[in-house]
Image (cartoon, rainbow, N blue to C red; front, side, top):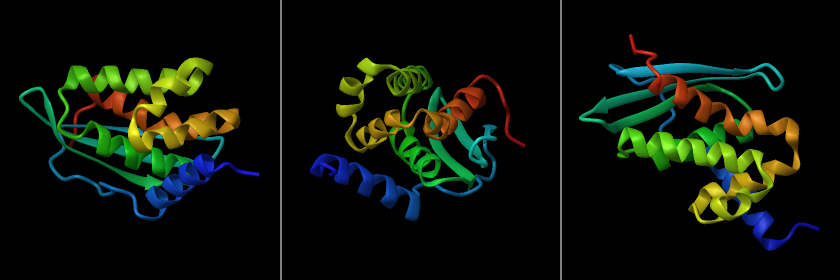
Length: 146
């Protein structure tokens, strides 16, 4: 039987899947990158607008499973208005926390992002949860917008 906390996490994932935040193709993005997960068919693109070393806008567009869509939605909420270096470090922490056993503590201090902690029980779904974060990293690494 699911605990109340697990039920809450599942509700957060479903809410962000049904009503994803910042889900649109951004015009005039300064950076963008695509992510694809062949295991699940998730296919998304992350868009960034960066000014003065700050993420002034972030969005994503694509199709994917509930986990990848929710993770992308949660990512956009968390990284919006952050300095690039802070956002990169945060992205690294999230990805590490999702891969490692000790990551529970970090995720549990991150508000709704804690909902992704349950994905660790399903190793095949980790790529779904980290896809948007990897695309964010690639966008920052230099993938310029059109």
